[in-house]
Length: 382
Ligand SMILES: Cc1ncc(COP(=O)(O)O)c(C=O)c1O
Image (tube, rainbow, N blue to C red; front, side):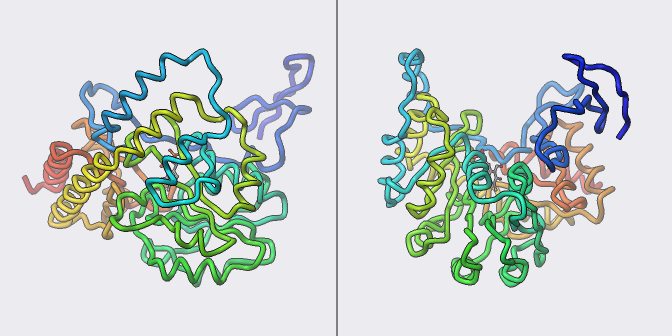
């Protein structure tokens, strides 16, 4: 921290914190400046004009045609404010997923639901628990709320229920678990999740993040557990299998007492008419979802098998990406550079404490073949 001490805007003095001019009097809440900026997946490679983006777990097939048609239609009403209760979207989700529409809340991506949860349930002195290789937004939202992030070791890149329960204290307010998890792709059984929910201290809420739930055939994302208990909330997204990452729509499902609280912190117009209409059309087109799930499963398993044969193993993934493991960080970075030079953008995951790994989104058939060819030349096999 270096003090520059000159008069800033309005005559207030400023100083540098990590290279950014800060104001001595106008300060953020404690802990905010400790938050590491979230880095999204790269989309460009310098000097390479044609790239295949496999760095953000997006659906290579994009949204359904019905969703795209709804997007066009929504142009007619851009001058109108959206509804505040999201009733049509909530009822569509409830109908398709067999849920209670009254206990659904919609947000600008599931990120926003995660933020609402932290804002509403965690503050200074409270602890927010998540796993070692858990999604970075859990830490960010906990710190933004002034709470203490608590990271729990995983076992072989898989959440460990006993370790999570052992980490809970009287200060634990939220426990985040993505199932399947990003970036590992692993998941724990419904029985283990139920055991976790049952073993939490009474003041703690379990947040089951189902961003990749639709990729697992026959899995409800934890909805039945939400219905059975008072301490479980599920979050879901339209960004992954529904192919709508650019539009920012997510939702949560929980007990009435939680949804009521979250609606109090939610801005009334947090979703636009376009977001609402497109998401409704998307969720009503389950044929598209099933096609995407099947393609993903087929090419994910093929990709994992081919890379394993080249000496790059991964844990069995339940999601739309694989976590490719290399000998060490140097080899992972060298392979990343090799792929990037061929226009293949994947994700380094050192920030997830997995420096020797690359997370590779499952693209379409052509993209998966390109990745395998590039890894083969990297390994000197072809
Ligand atoms: C585990 C997990 N949860 C939540 C999200 C947030 O998704 P969104 O805010 O796009 O709904 C992501 C996105 O990558 C994710 O991987």
